[in-house]
Length: 222
Length: 79
Image 1: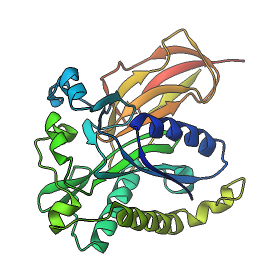
Image 2: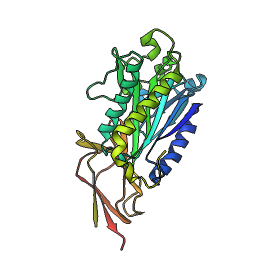
Image 3: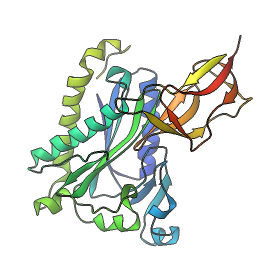
């Protein structure tokens, strides 16, 4: 599995890289890659975004240095900031399982397993996508799939610093309260530590779910 | 004439919404071109054209709900 650790980047840079890696996965150069990054403040609008779920005008967003992008993922509006860890898995599901729900639940499992290593019990909610802790949402998911290759992905709120920027939207089109790993634990958390843990979780999942398919890759997968 | 049906998208998914047609009826498409974007709650899914030809008919408009297995479009195959 290829890893791309971008540090803190504008959303657009990671978006363009996703498209670039998508092309390589489509050409069968490799079957799985994950981009990890943190974003400068940005609101992205998925295909299901309803106008009412954006609570601030463009001028207000500009004044708060928050960029705005319409993107091709599913889901409604979401916010990304440097207090979050964002992961964009680009996987050829032909080599895993061609099942959108399986993939969404797998991302939730990976997040829950990662949180668990930090002593936090994350939960799924019936008929909803994402991960909750003590009734508040800690991680969001929105994906796109072309030719059974995934892009876009997940974000986990780690630090509490910029959670207030969620006030500019109704996250995922719902009246929900967001939380962060730091808020739950009541202490600072190293985003680097969470990132390294999340990488391990992705590698575990790659081994468990993609193993039987690796023979189908034309070139050697790293 | 090749019918394009909404494929199985995953366990428990019985329908999806047409969110974008990349081509209009009468336009030529290549095999594997993105033909139509389908949306479920948290995912978009692009359905590629199964063959090269002309998109002759679409049965659903953007915003319409489609059941798995239903025909979305017809392509007159290029010979």
